[in-house]
Image (cartoon, rainbow, N blue to C red):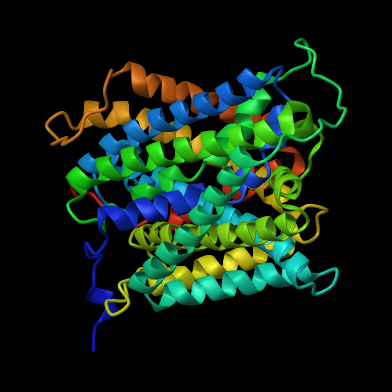
Length: 445
C-alpha cells in the first residue's frame, strides 16, 4: 500500500493534457456573459473587436512572463513558489491564505453558481435550485479530484472537447445565420464610453490562464513544455474568442449586443429558433463543469504547498496520495471552504457577481506581486538556469505590472462591499504567519 505522507508529485501530464486544462480553465462561463457588457462600453463595432484583441495581447504578455517563471522555477506550488523565492515565506504564506480563502475557493463558488443558474433552467429545483446545484457540483467535482489526478484529467479532456464543440457550433451558426433586424438601442456617445471598464470585463473573460503554472511539478519536461503549453494555449484562446465575438456581432450587431442579457442564447434563437436557447444553456452547463473541474484540480496544489510551511495541521493537509497522484486532503479542505462561500453568495441577489467582487482586489494585488517577482528573481538568482527568457525584457514584465496595477485599482473602486470583505478575510490571515515554520536553509529551486 502506498504511503501518502512520503509520496511526491509525479510528471504525469503531457503538453496536450496541460493545454486542455488551460483552455478548460479560461473558456468557461465568461464568454457567455461579458460581450454585452463590453458592447455597452465601446462606441463602434471595430472597437468592440479591438478590445478583445488587446485582451488577448495582455494575456500573451502575462503568459510570456509566467513562461520564464515556470520554466526556471517549476513546482507544484506555482505562484506560491515564485512569491516564496522572491519575497520570502511570509509573503508566500499570505498568498497561500488568500488563495485558499478568497481567490481559488471564490472562483470555484462563482463557477458553481453559474452552473446552478443554468442547470436549474434545464431541471428546476425551485427558488433555491441554483444554490442546491452549486453545492452538488462542488461535492461531485471535489470527489473526482480526491480520487485522482488521472481521473480528473480524463474528465477534463472529455468535457473540454464537448465544450469546444459547442462553441464551434455557435461560431458556425453565427457565420451562417441571417443578421437580425436590429433592436433599437441608444448608441453610446464617445464621451460616455468607458474603454477601461470594457477591458475589465474582457480580462475577466480571459482570466484563468495563470492557473497552468500550478502544473509545473506534474508536467513532463516542464523546462521545455511549459512554454509550449502557455503559448499554444493562449493562441487557441485568442482565436476562439475573436471568432465567437465576430459571430455574435455579425448576427446581432452592436446595438443588439447592448440590448441583450444573454447574447449567445439570443443569437442562437435568431438563427436556429427556440431550440437554440436550450442548446446554449446546455453548452454553458458543460462549460461550467469544465471550468469547475480544472479550477479545483489546480487550486488544491496551493493548499498542498502551503501546508509544508505550517507547524500546525501541515502534515495532514500536505499528504500526497500516491495511488491517486493527488493532494487528496488539500482537495477536501478546498471543497469545504468553497461550500462556505456558496452559503455566503446565496444570501445575495446574484451569487456569481458577489463571488467575482469578493475575489477581484485580492487576486490582482497578488498578480502584481508575481509580475514584479520576475525582476526580483533575476536579481536574487542571477546564476539560475532559465530555459526560457521573456522577450523584450524589461519592457514586457513592466507592461504586465502596469496592467495588473490598473486591474487592482479597478477592483478596489468597483467591487463594493463584497470586495472589502475579501480584503478583510485576507487581513484575517495575518495570524497564520505565527504558524510559519522557521526555515533557514538556502532557497530550493
